[in-house]
Image (cartoon, rainbow, N blue to C red):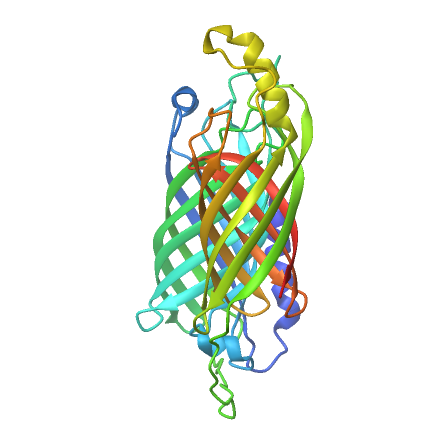
Length: 362
């Protein structure tokens, strides 16, 4: 832990020689509560989780079009330490990327961060059977928060206070995986490496319309996951989507589409369920395939966009999950037509898959 502190404190020193330095460092102290969303979570919550979030950020200087379009956000990297005050849950360490967006004369900050977490005490059949939240050491970590922010409280030093929500899940790449959510009071300081940082918006930019005709997209997503039965085996899945999108302005694109889900772990789960629960009269040959329809929204930033979708299964012979699903993730446009993405598909709070996708837009 001490080594990580030193890394975040010493790394920015290399930028001190820069004039009009856009970099800053932040330290946030966290304390709050867990949000149990399943019955098997209540016995894991024994105290008030706390933690520390360290960030290195770069302030947008106006040199790119999207800086001005999004009111000069911050972007950078973070390290998050969280102690759940629960012996079965242990502690988590996370690293990843973040954006800070500003509103209300730059005094209201919305933070969005996504990364990878390491759990010190995941589920173990012999030594830690109570932890049904983390089935693996490596997981995805998502954080979002809302804070009052004053970047110039005293010379280079600023202050922020608000609330931060954290989420951990491995996307059921390995069971168990109930995941865990916490909400935390967020108090912190930031240090700007330049006291006289100035933004230089490009006044030569020509405003243009971002409206586009309807485009059609083909997306192939894949990965591995496991059924809710622990140690039942991990299998590949293949999710194939076709949808139309319509970009209506600089920031917003709307989607409407359909998709086919070929989830091999579900096929094995049906076989298990037919034997374990004969009173349910489920045949082992029940079709495991599912077909969904969905609507979506894409927040266009630059080559990166944030994607959210909500769907409904119109074909689902094995009805163990609720018929509504949702998906959130990040897309990156390699070209105007070719893109890749990383998304998590869930049924409300219960994750089903971490998806790695590639798509083509025509």
